[in-house]
Image (cartoon, one colour):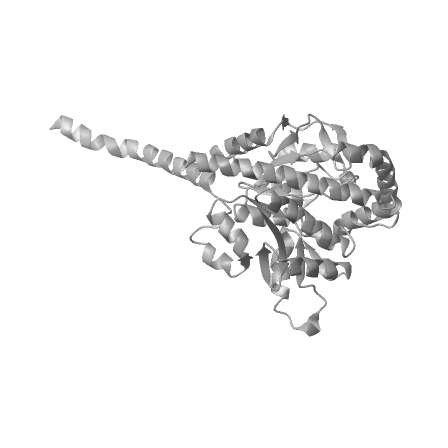
Length: 368
């Protein structure tokens, strides 16, 4: 009887510790498995705000590779109609590889994933008139809400072009594996006094499902400080067929990525390892601009960049207006050479991004 009493008395002493351990494990598991993507409980509410084109929807359901694209390059990066021509050519490159392009923007009160040619043209035309808002995470809700305003209160814009950060956010929610852009934002020169740091970096640290393929950090930024912030945020920077970190218009910024890969297969293996461990942090593939463009324009564009930055400081241009001003001014100072290089690198990135998306698709199929 005494033994039985001891046996029945011992569990209460052990149980609190076991219960606490289980709670910690449950909490950890919940953290590791958490996702910002669409879930069964949230899809109904999100579906009232997100409109996915039929092509993109079909592709996502049938494991056809999808590549996300931003829309700021259409509305703020170039003049009309060159902006629309470039956007459609980039989509065509992705389509020719067997992938489905998914350009993202806010139109008519919806976040749209996959635009029609008519919608791309509308963004380009309205953007040239100043009728499109640059949208990062913080701007998505206001732009969606503006659609409900009467026309008489048009002090606020209703069309939104997604920046790198907003495009990455939406692509990650939709579990689109690859997002292609020109270059990402980062830490601006002089940020130690202005604190001007792009939200692209924060969004990269949150991306669990989507990787970014770009030509590195825009050359107008402080690349060293940008890489330091990315390291702090746990973002893996990957040189694609290079051990140097590119700087948009130039192939070598003088800095190194955290690692490198030599093929789309190696890139896909890296992504698969990240996903398998549920690391819940971003991966940035930095692709050098095609060599012939750097040789032709690299040094000249760097001189134009330095001059444009001086002019921006003199005019006290700050915040979200800095990048559009600098890019436009560099085009003017370089007499259009920077624009041709910009277009070339975006197209090159589209090819690389599509190649990676195809390998990822094949890996998923072989796994099933």
